[in-house]
Image (cartoon, rainbow, N blue to C red; front, side):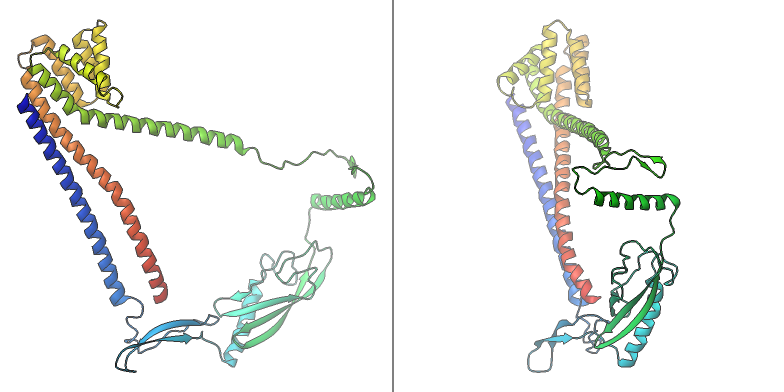
Length: 424
């Protein structure tokens, strides 16, 4: 017995050492990956980053385009003194000459002639809102709009109220770029919208409601007409809330609860299987020791159950719970063979099915080869436990690597995005 305990102890030490070695190897690989990526990024920015080829470009610094803003650029100057000096250069955006500005303004007006129409076919028949841009990005021209009739057409191109008859409106466009400015006038003709008979009826009915409200201002209630143009009317409050989404939310929540329950069930089953596999080596080892000491399988089984009830009963040990159920089945009259067979089926794992088959076969053929079979099973069980522990360690290491690489990716983005924007 002492020799067996010593062997088991040595196997546990080797397993722990193997797991620790695997974990340290993953940590070293992760650290090496981080250092390698950071060195590659540093080298790229050092030799190909913004500002590295300034001298090769002849000292030319690109301005922002027309309509841009002034920017500041820090430069390292060599040759002013014995050491390099850092200076800050203010770089203004590019501007037009007077002739270029005039050409740009006329080109912008030709472009605006089509752009401001929106859904209208012509400025001579405007029934929908106009699209009045305040800035032309391609040419860097700023535009301010003014309307001669703001109560009909606002300076943003919105038709105010309802157009009942033909109206002439003059739009003024003030174009500016740099120090140059030009004013243009655009005539616009507003026309009433063509309406269907139902739309016209609704409009006149709305006007009638306004008239009735004015007449009945001194009354406690507004009396609505029950007839209008020969039509019988009825009223009800419009729904303020859309309650139709409530059943949909209920169905969605029910589906989420079902999915959550299924996910939790699978997680519980996975955890139970892991605990069963981790405890298998210990359970078979104890059984082998007790049988080797001269106890029958049933007595050894009962001894292990009583030890569990007296020591680890409150811990989550599925294998001992299943052994406990099997023991009390035998106490209540179930045959040993049937109880062991049922034990393997409940555990649903290959090692337990194999063990139940060995114990059931022992009931038929006797204990002649049982000790040797259990010894072989113990060796296989400890090897399986070592492999399982290694796999669980690899899974845990993989889960830890993901946040690490995400953090590294975020750092790279924080460095690369400003660099690329500056290069652009």
